Image 1 (cartoon, rainbow over the protein chains, first blue to last red):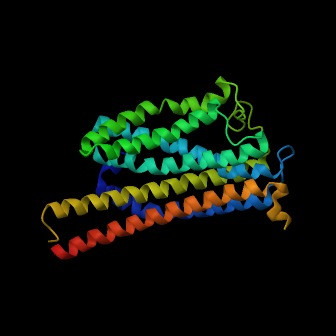
Image 2 (cartoon, each protein chain N blue to C red):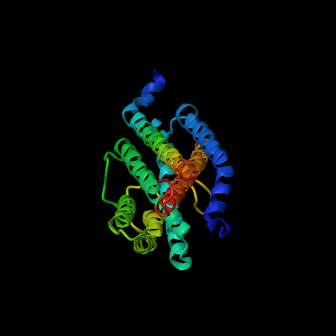
Image 3 (cartoon, chains in turn red, brown):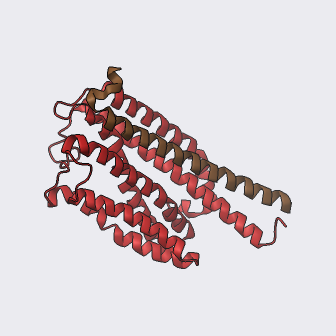
Length: 239
Length: 50
């Protein structure tokens, strides 16, 4: 991992990996969502609305994973003072915000037919809305401070402190009474969901993860290219 | 037709999928466009300085 902290090495390795990760994303999401819409049977209690699970749960998982990675990169940036870690953290944020927003919107569209409401201020939904605000605050902080080193440091502190929200989201359905269902997949004693529902969910979730990875890599590559263009211009090239 | 009706929940299921696909598609398009622009900008600067 530390070997990748060299921008040149990152460009070389990511160029080789990116097409495979992107292809995996396309295939996994395509197969997963095809099964979700056309193959998985309507569920006994909630009927066809169970199909919303396949765009809701992977978005939520990816949103939280992205935050964890952003906080980890922020920590590496703070401790090791490595600019590539700061860039990686910064470029994860808009993607994380997108997946968070998708989880909230699709969850809302699932809540109306199953719970009778689009929104409720309970622990799971509120802590997930806080995740969106953490992402937006993080992005705003980067934009508010002009000096890049100082911006990176301030944003990193926010990202690391905000990581406390991740276990709160995870355990919110156990700590508080909530409309949101409890953990039904990664629980002691095995999942409470039948395999025919489960494996398309895992395929889609793996596809979302690969899609996030592809876009993250592309954004980091873009940032590195822009930086070296800036450096060349500042050095008096291209005049 | 029965497929499109989604057991009476079409009004929730299709928007959930539609918003997801539009948002992810837009993210892919915008990310690729920014990447290609940065790439061509850098190669232009390199050409001019060569």
